[in-house]
Image 1 (cartoon, one colour):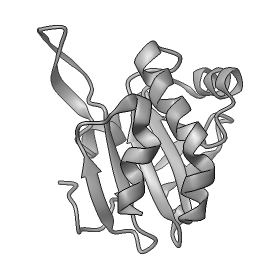
Image 2 (cartoon, rainbow, N blue to C red; image 1 turned 90 degrees about the vertical axis):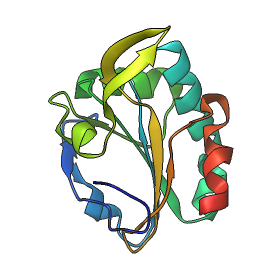
Image 3 (tube, rainbow, N blue to C red; image 1 turned 30 degrees about the vertical axis):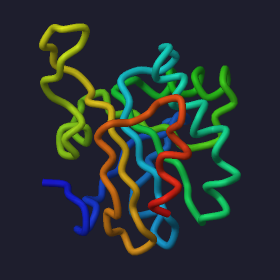
Length: 150
């Protein structure tokens, strides 16, 4: 179970270039880890662009941004290029990390129960400890939402 004040479980997933990236490779920096349903969809794009626009503020707090969705690396590459996303996007098509972090499961969408990505964000400290689990992400203001925890 992933929870605040405990170590963030490590994982390795391919980035937009297909290169393996481990969460532990960011040790020593704050990490804003966000789980989102799909590349280049309206709500996910608002969230991704809010984080993009907040990168300078986040960098002042020694923070990096890492996004995870079930999309494949080529989809991530197109999404990064189209919207100028200067941070790491990781592909989890098998949904192993999504499941382990509680970001895959049953949710309500437009009044119907569906299984899918549960949008959420984690703020992880330089020591690898989860500082904050944000369950209700304000997509258009995602960057400002994490700032108090950095």
